[in-house]
Length: 212
Image (cartoon, rainbow, N blue to C red; front, top):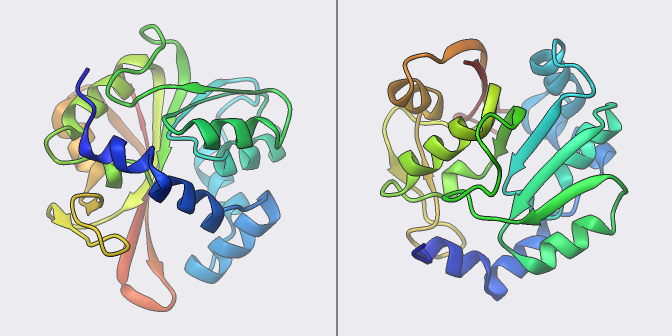
């Protein structure tokens, strides 16, 4: 498989710097979301995942150091998996809590069989996939999900590139929910929420849950 520019960047020192900037425990994530959106991470997750059994098999694409799945663990979810491309992030995440099944893996070639997970999700990961590769990543996510796909990503009506820490070709925003449903006509929207930033109402994130 071709190693993309984005993967090379995230596996470099640039990706390791991200690790240092974005270390949050569950309580700190709640505080971050409250300051950003006016709603805690726990309340937001409960709103979307209230009907998901706590023993559901859940996969995060792009786990990094495990902030999101640690938060799910704090909410009582017990069957959590993740894939990540950066070795240092994987090792760091594994030392943060027990029972986190995190392995090295690429979103373009997810190392699990079809329909293996009840829920597959990304939080702030699709935004880092190039428009040339995004549809292939969505196909992989769809392939390994048995029932639900969950996401939280930057939102825009049209595909828009954003400069990321002075670098190009590393971040984009669009309507990822629409992109999923354009690619897979059997997906039904369970819930969608557009989250406006308190400090800048023009900045919007989109959380969505779709079901096969």
